[in-house]
Length: 113
Image (cartoon, rainbow, N blue to C red; front, side, top):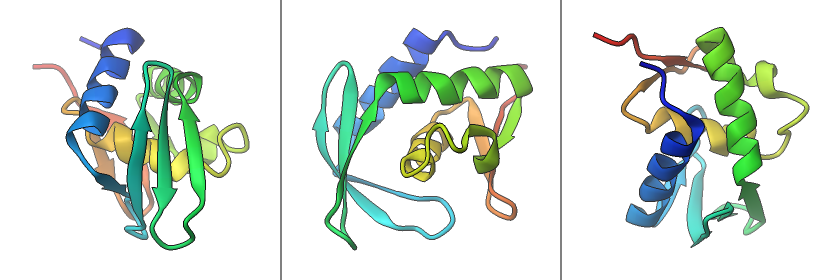
């Protein structure tokens, strides 16, 4: 069964609250998880020290695309989520009902048993 976005968002918040950092999938860039709110997650790149606010609506946009297509690459959420898409993919890839591949980078809904 495909999860509702509210369930997905709670799972993402749990991931963010249980970790200090998250790595992008391809380049493995480390992002510190700075703040976790009910409406956003803020991360800071260890490399550039730039902060990025990842609003809930951005995650919902990516999730809606994934639900519709079952498998998506970064190009499927670009340019809408430019500058945030790799980190959003990293969070989604950590969900137990999502698989990912690196070459080429894509995330995919796991099939229900």
